[in-house]
Structure formats: structure tokens, C-alpha cells
Amino acid sequence: MTNSILNLPEKPKPLRLDWVSVAFFATIHILALLSFWCFSWGALGVTVFLHWLFGSIGVCLGYHRLLSHRSFKVPKLLEYAIAILGALSIQGGPIFWVAGHRLHHAHTEDEEKDPYSARRGFWWSHMLWIFYPRSEFFDYDLYQRFAPDLARDPFYVWLNRYFLLLQIPLALCLYALGGWSFIIYGVFLRSVILWHTTWFINSVTHIWGYRTFDSDDNSCNLWWAAILTYGEGWHNNHHAYPHVAKCGWRWWEIDMTWWAITLLKTVGLAKNVNLPPEQAMKV
Image 1 (cartoon, rainbow, N blue to C red):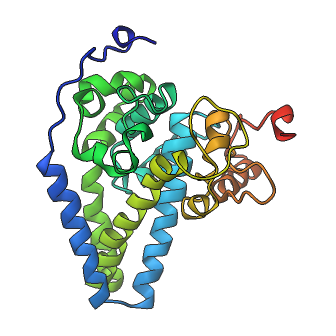
Image 2: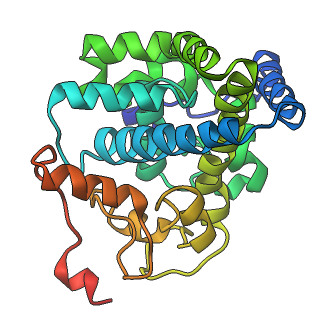
């Protein structure tokens, strides 16, 4: 598609550093360092559990495989609940996340049309794209057109606008369960770890790993990224067949998010699950 069809500017404006974003992410990283002074096994357990709940179920299963690619269907109320878990990851609202990811697949590694193009370098695809925001990817009036199915839903419009406020009830619950250490570990440390593990998919899996399929990009399958992201690291498989619900195809390509989808399917909550084509499974 051309820039005119996408309504993207022919000549992007010069990039400017967004100091609000820098301050926000820097503050969360600094607060996460307090975890060295308030360690407890319970707090560490909260970090691990919420990393899985918000990361695997909220982002990988919800934002990514369910909302971005519609690789399976669940009842609408369950879809909303999973989207809330994704919003709790502090990776943006659902419309923002889905729109950016769909653009990533439509123009993978294009330096102007892919929001986090790996061709701009490791640090750009990993995090700098957030600090140098372009209006077509960060202005709601512009990016919402790439997720029209969500933009038509009042619930997703609300969640996209107010997702950050969900951290308040989460923090209150954590404080009631374990005091300030649970907040430090369950909000700040968890957010930092989950951010970077998710960002690894944008950065390292377009640089290192092996390629099962000859896709029109540099996506790779990287085992340690897959472990950290509950299966998302089998990125070459995903780019070759983005609408397939399963990312790990070979028996040793562990995909924990697929296990959750399989469980939903077994109990009758997941329908129309897109599976890998038999021909591709023989590769």
C-alpha cells in the first residue's frame, strides 16, 4: 500500500525526543531498583506471577494473538477481561498496541512505515521508537484507523484512554497483600522486566536466531527470547503465518501461550482456532 492510501506523510517530520516519555520510563526503572532493599520471596513470586499473567495472557494471548491477528475467538466478556490484563502490562492501550502491531506486519522493517523497524538498529526497535514518537503511530486520530474493529467498540476506546489508571487498584491490592515491597516488585520491577522481554521481540528476533521459513523480512526464531516471552520468540514462524494461533511449531519450540489457548479450546471457550497448515508443518 502507498503512503497516500495509509494517510502517512510522504516526508516524515524530524524526530524529536519526548521528555515526558523519557521521564516516565526512567522513573519506573529507578523505582524498580528499590527491589534490592525490600526483597522477599513472596514479593518475587508476585513479580513472576504478574509477569506471566499480564505478559503471556494479557499481551501475548490477548493483545497479540487474539486482538491483533484474530487467530481465535472467545466470548466477548472473556475477551474484555483478557484485554484488561493486557492493559495492566503498561504497554499502551489495546487500540494503540494493535494498530502498531498490524502496521509492523503490513510493512515489516520498512524504516518509515514500521513503527519499530529493526533496520533502524537494535536500540530503535527495542525502545527508542517510544522516545521519538511519530504522530502517525502515537496520535489516536491517526493510528486508530489501523484497528477499526477495536475503535468501534466503546469499551476498547475507554480502555485505550484510561489504561494507566488500572495501576491504582492493582497497587492497592498489592499493598493490602504485602505492603510496599509487593508494590515495588509487582508494579515497578514487574513492569521493567516485562517491557524489556516484550521489546526483545521487536529487536533481537529480527537480528539473531534461525529461520525455518523464507519470509520477506529478517525475522528469526530465538529460543531464549521464546522462553522469556512465553512463545513469542518463535518469530520467524509467526511472520510466515501471522494469523496462526500457535508460534512454536516443532516439538521442542516451547510455546506456553499456546498451552493457554489449548486449555481455553478444551473447555469450550476458544473457537475458530487457526492452526498451522499441514504443508508448512512438514518444513
